Image 1 (cartoon, rainbow, N blue to C red):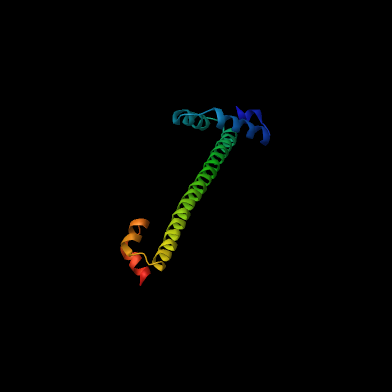
Image 2 (cartoon, one colour):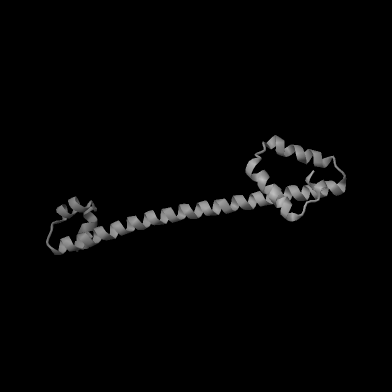
Length: 125
């Protein structure tokens, strides 16, 4: 039907946008137009297939873009979390250095910072 209307590119995009947003088809419903296309005249069938492929390509591109955006958000969140952890670790190491300089014993430093005794011993030596 869309082929027979001979709509310009802008109107086709408008209709495809409407379909993508409000019309969710099952696999069976998506297969039906392909079957109908196989029974059309060659010229008309070719034009319809171009529209179907174009529609699918736009959907694929949209899906890829959404995937990239979601990946970036997750990556940023992961990076911030890792950065916070590294900052906390650096802060603890700084506190350990100061405590060692003030003469605190390794067991007390371990108890207060939660750092492994071996790591505190290495910093001491």
